[in-house]
Image 1 (cartoon, protein in one colour):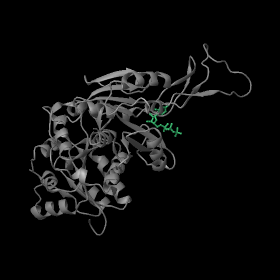
Image 2 (cartoon, helix red, strand yellow; image 1 turned 45 degrees about the vertical axis):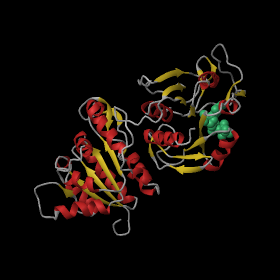
Image 3 (spheres, helix red, strand yellow; image 1 turned 180 degrees about the vertical axis):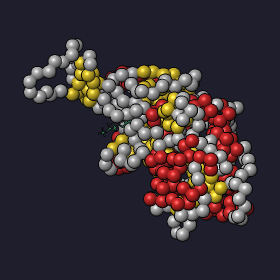
Image 4 (cartoon, helix red, strand yellow; image 1 turned 90 degrees about the vertical axis):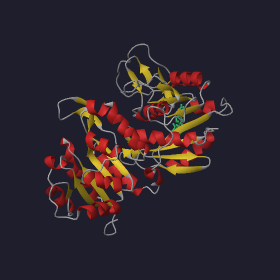
Length: 419
Ligand code: CTP
């Protein structure tokens, strides 16, 4: 805290995206936080301390040969005063240094002394981001409780197109605010590394078969038209990938999405189109499942008849008659074997928690992830999400975090309740 306000310590490192840190600093100030900015020597080549000092009204800490401030005291004081450390943009170099415990400049020395939640927003070239060394460093930091906001895909400064663009400034601000507002800082502060597999991940789902559904369904009206919804499939795909990383054998049943089919050899991919295809695939794979996660946005209604030929327009309006689809979870409640675990999802525009709790009991679920669609940055299409996990023995409200992070938190909630 500084002057009674929550304080964000923003570390800016050497990346062309450093200029976006000015908008991040300004965004925090607008939201009523105080901001202290630290610049690495390379960061200072992209943006000047004066920009930040003008925006924040506070001294920008820079690692230069200018020793006119009390270095040792200053970095500990900055670390102690912060409620959130945000590294944005975070270069591959600084991520590597933090993961290696290196403290050779103002920024890395300070970060090592920070005990509040830490959020890292990487920005770099796609090949650098995909490099297993960088991926391993991030995995290690995640195990220490560092949170990440994944970079976006797009045209990069180097001319390449791919993943590596600094996440959207609004998303960074929303995720940061979610962390600052969350009362559950303990998860973010975890300092112990859980048991690890050879590649650095936890294997708490090993030996379990997890069926995950994802995406929307498409209900055909005729050969060229269909009814669908806004589901992007990102949440379901993140769950499938996270479960596979944690050792599960995953069956991902996916409605039509724009996402790339996961390449993980522990994920078998079952593409479906309609709610009826989805029901058939789930019923087939549920037999062997230990855990079912129904993240798909399955249509509740489908056109009663599907025209063989394209429907031609005529004068006047048109009425489409719809029929109910099979309620997959509703059907499974009678087929569930002893020991099988079911996680449902729920999306509502009003009374989210109350309606989701009703669904938990009505559909005989073990847990339900209540998915906000009203909070900025949460729900359809976003890379971030805000979910409340409702179980029979309690509730846990997650802050606005990445869908990958949300997936891991949902899996944590599942694994501690699986018999
Ligand atoms: N679901 C399902 N079969 C359907 C529709 C939905 O199994 N035909 C699953 C979804 O995958 C999700 C959960 O049911 O896990 C909640 O879906 P939702 O449509 O929000 O809830 P409903 O109980 O159908 O309630 P309502 O549509 O009235 O909000």
